[in-house]
Image (tube, rainbow, N blue to C red):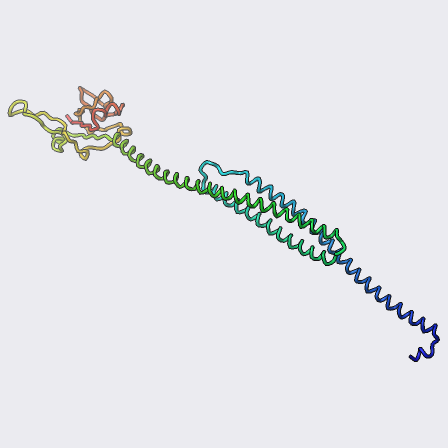
Length: 313
């Protein structure tokens, strides 16, 4: 108030103008700072959107690759032949891996949608007058939506394939169980048959021989005396092989392997019906055999009987 009384009017007007000018400059600086901050935010928003779009481009490429793998896997079909347990385990492991890939793709889509929603909210706040930014965000949201639809379609198709494979695996498992049981049954039958064949073969190839004097063999029950004496009260009775021969009184051999029978010292004759023509005695004189007997043709020699009785003269 003291200045107003001392300064002339022109000077007072000048002071008033300078003061008003200073206030205008402060307002301009404030507006400039606000616009600059808003511009920086929009630039940052565009940079974030650009980075997201670039990342999404790589994501789209990865997604297409994964979808291509899924399609190629779906072309594989289970063999109509019986599948081993290891093959079934491989099929289950492959299905689990593909299902995990689908889950990862869906999770990445969820993350992308969340980031796009955040970008759209920021764009609406910072770029009310920038329609191109809003359009970019909307286009990106449409891209994510299309990708989700594709993944969901592929997921549904693959789940259908898995369901079919489950039915096939169940069928094959039933077949494998049936065949396994049948194999066990057949294996048991083969074992029993092999035992039977082995037993029959062993029995067929088993032969018996006994060596001794007539009296020794009669005493053992291998030979029996039949009929009357040839000269009333004197002379001996006819001797024949017992009707029921006890294998325990004989030596058991395998006629396919044991082709040599050794004799104790002395002269011997073959009492039973084996044909000596199919064997070679070590020594033969006047129809008497000594030393031993080599059987040259076992099948022909043992054909009349598998019991061989050799009597010492």
